[in-house]
Length: 159
Image (cartoon, rainbow, N blue to C red; front, side, top):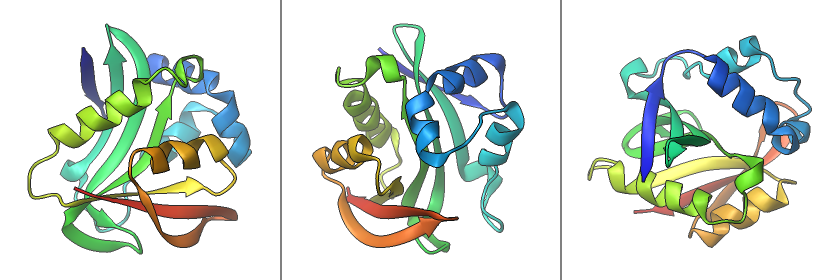
């Protein structure tokens, strides 16, 4: 059973989880601290805090993933109430290639309100595993962009 648990601040469980995701954070060349994670949880200026979600994801009562998303946000900082933007999705590195990520994203999409028609996200261009994962779920490229100095590919899934 997949359970989503909303959080509002970095707790020890999330911090320890992120410390274990060395492969992902090496792509960004980031040293994980609680402060870095808190900064990551900030919403884009001008967006509704109530529509921003940071959720720990549990499968069989074990934290397996983390997802951060904003409802009503789309690529290029545009307000659009038919879009959801996934800011971060991490599956425990020890659980990759076991179907957990796919099951979690499918469950995530199923829990969205019916008025959302699109899900967007940016994936680090050289994150080959991430690129393959999102494409395998039907996401398609809509743009090339940058997150700071990091090249990213913007993906979209039409619901």
